[in-house]
Image (cartoon, rainbow, N blue to C red; front, side):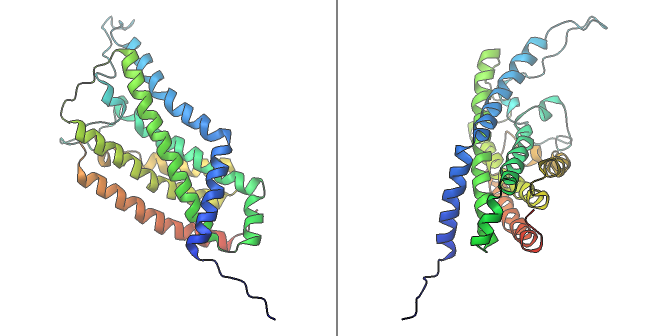
Length: 265
């Protein structure tokens, strides 16, 4: 009697891969370290800059202006105006937009560990479907990045309260903040897809993947305030959601080709 092996569907394979990847991510201390850094960063930024404001400049004798005048500036800047798209002051740079650089580190380290430990080689020896790996890694890293974004938001609220900064909304409202947060979370998918492509190119060479990711991240940095302002609306959310889906599919296909055409070491 001839033995018959039941073929597994893509969704069955993906479900198994996601279960493994989520377990690997959340049993690694690294994700908790990154979440802790994300939480602590805005607290330190807001508290330290609040101490700097109002102090006299030794050179001129004039009082230094406060860097942040309200808590929400630590999240994003208000869009609109003639030069807001290209305005890159300290409050624009030292806010939640920095998280995309930290997410690059998360994606690169998490992926490189698969190749360094031999997990990827063993996995692909048993399962030839590298597309399963790419889709799973994209989704899991997106969740990890979203957790870091939310941790930063909590830290900003705590830091603002400690620093005594006002929570007043000038030029935006609570709905804009909600839309801003959704847009920033969906934008994570765009960056994860880019960073994952560099990670599978570099494989176990973490330094190379981080270097490439940081370079592209710096190039795209000025686009983030335009796509995720504090006065965001439904259009911003849809645009970042669509962009995240397109980048995930398009660059996911590129990552799949790279894995199929290159060695695993």
